[in-house]
Structures are given as C-alpha cells and as structure tokens.
Image 1 (cartoon, rainbow, N blue to C red):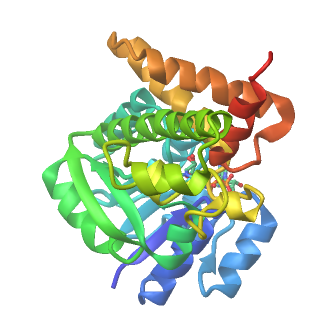
Image 2 (image 1 turned 180 degrees about the horizontal axis):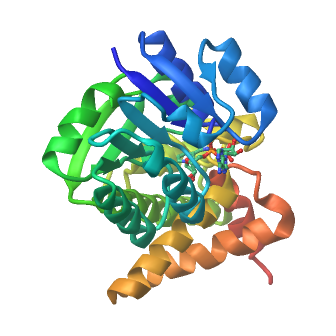
Length: 295
Ligand code: NAD
C-alpha cells in the first residue's frame, strides 16, 4: 500500500480519497475548505495544513481541482516539496494546454506524471466505479494504474501527456450533442402525437440508440433511474456541461478543428445555464428545447 497525498476534496475528490483509505492506503489530504478537510478526517485521512506539507513523504500525489489554473498553481507549489521520482496524477477536467504544461513542469522537477480525468460523476466517485482516461508515459501510467483501480473500474491509457484530457472533452462533446439530439426527437414526437414510450421502444433498439437515450433518457418514464424522473436533479449539472463544451471549443480552435455541432451545443447549454438552470441536470436541456417553440 502507498502513501498518497490527495489535494482537492470536493464533490469528487472527497469520496475518491475516502476510497483510497478504504483500500488501505495511507492518505494525507488537503483542501482550502475546512468542512472538506473535516469530512476527509472522519473518512480516515490524515489532514495536512497545506498542499506542500501534504506531499512530504508521499509515493503518489493526486490533485482533483476545478480548472487548469488551480492545477498549475498547486503543482507549482507541491513539486519542489516532493521527493524525486514521485508520481503525480491530476484527475481534474482541465484544458489540454494546461495539462501539457503540468506534465512539462513535473518533468522539470524529475517527477513522473499522468493526466487522468474521470467520467462517472459523484455516484462513480462514491462507488469507486469511475472511468479514468489517462495521458502520460507508459511507465508513469503503469505506476498509476493500481492506485486508480481503487477508485474506478475502467482505466484506459489514451497516449502521451494531455491525451486523457483530449479523450475526456471529445467524449463529453459527443454527450452534449447527443443529449440535445435525443431531447429534440422527444419534443418533435410530442408535437406529432407520438408517445414517449413508443419513441423510446423504437429508437432504443434502432439506429437512434445511444447512451443519452437508453441510460439517461431525458423524459420521465422509459428509464426509471434517469434524472428526468427526479425533477432533473444532477447527476451531471448543466454548468459542468458548459465547462466541458467550452474546453472542447477552446481545443478545437487551438487545433484548427471545425466542430459546428459542438459549438451549437455549447451555445444552447450556455443559454440554459444563463437562464438560471446551471444546477439542473444536463438532460434538462429538453425543457429549453421545448421552450424554443413559438419563439
Ligand atoms: P468541487 O468544486 O466540488 O471541488 C474542487 C475542490 O478543490 C474544492 O473543494 C476546492 O476547495 C478545492 N481547491 C481549489 N483550489 C485549491 C487549492 N489551491 N488547494 C487545495 N484545494 C483546492 O469540484 P468537483 O465536482 O469535485 O470536480 C472536481 C473536478 O472534477 C473538476 O475539474 C470537474 O470538472 C471534474 N469532474 C466533476 C464531475 C462531477 O460530476 N462533479 C464529473 C467529472 C469530472
């Protein structure tokens, strides 16, 4: 078992750190927020008074933070305090460019590094069923794998530094677009007098089949576990979808890729968010689509 430093104990990082404790690792944790530190303490982690003191003596350092600027800030702070050769893993969802900068920073300090963003949300973080999409050298990935396995069930090596973030934003661009497509189909069905269940029964076994329909159906009824049956409580909040679609657009612009549907999906989610629905599950976008009629 390893000595693990865990920095960023929010909705995702808190339960992920708790799962590492459960797996028998010696976890030392830090977050800026006192309530998150208290929760980690009651979950069995030792609490440090800064990021730099958390990483002292650690075999593995994990960060789970809001955005690229936080990751670069924390990595700049902790890397000089780490022993040479220590592995540092960032599980946050951040822009590809910052992820590459973080890898370069780690290499400069003689550390192995992996970008390992996740999918699976807070339920996956609690249940240790996350999917990790990893970028970094093969040796660093091999060292990260056993620790990530205590927090998730699927771990994919996507390529060199930044490839995990690239996979994450490409996947979530598909998700954002496909949820709007499924929502539009249900709204059209309503206008045509076709029942939700009838459309579901056909499309879920036809060429319209996709995760947004069969696992996360945006209308109540056909998939009882989807947020549509629970007043669109997240789940995965629309403001996080705006974040990921914006990262995808930034990456597309930087790389010279043209992604018109990704761009339009970002605009629709931004409008939904700006109208006070940022905390609503992203499948709630169907309400926005429905409201477009007559505008
Ligand atoms: P969160 O806001 O709940 O947690 C982030 C934590 O980082 C906070 O507790 C904050 O206090 C802490 N923090 C910020 N700066 C810090 C610093 N300098 N030192 C120590 N702690 C610091 O966010 P979250 O929902 O846990 O998400 C974390 C990351 O995971 C984000 O990048 C997000 O996009 C990604 N993600 C979230 C979900 C989800 O469903 N919530 C799903 C997949 C990926």
